[in-house]
Amino acid sequence: MMKTDRFQAQEETTLYFEYGDTELNYLKQKDKILGAVIEQIGHVEREVDTDLFSSVVHQIIGQQISTKALATIWQRFRNGFEKIDAEHILALDAEELQAFGISFRKVEYIRDFAGKVQRGEFDLEQIAHMSDEDAIKALSSLRGVGVWTAEMLLLFCLQRPDVFSFNDLAIQRGLRMTYHHRAITPKLFEKYRRRFSPYCSVASLYLWEVAGGAIPGMRDYAPKKKQQKYKNL
Image (cartoon, rainbow, N blue to C red):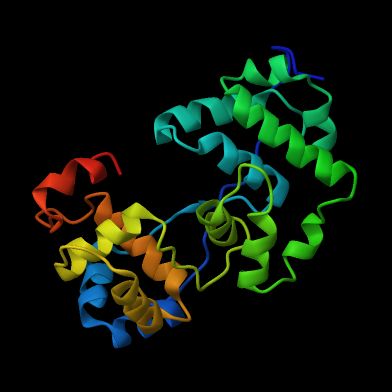
């Protein structure tokens, strides 16, 4: 059941995506421009959640809302459960889940996912043993989970080292800003993917930082009429 005010959120150790000199030295050697970006920014800490069930729920809740709104709702959500798992999710009805600030459609997706896990129709443990391609296919078969969401789960839950998402607008923006491109075509994106592989995930971390304004003076080279589309990334 839902926690009352007398319950406190369980303290959890914050985990970050793990990488080090091996990945950084490889990327610096393969790409001097990215190497300079890495030197300027320094080590990037991005939180990960190694619990796949929790991560799927987190990603569904976060779709099409701001980072700030997600942080607020997710903290409220975590405080409302002794454990975020199928049993505890399904113990609440749709209205109780909506009360955390989640849309009815997202509640449907979360309950459907929890039901599949509880009935054994979706094997969470098996995902960890799949290739990236098969894991993305399996995860994106869930309602409310598209390819981009599946890719983010591979990176920020499973910590796969070679994730590079063409569907991520901030990654595209980071590439434009770093390499002075006006647009990122699939062919151009594939060129960078091959260059950064097998450590695309670490390259992604730095491109996100660039897109977020980590290096003063770097600008987006997209045509001005498209700038508004990327303004809030």
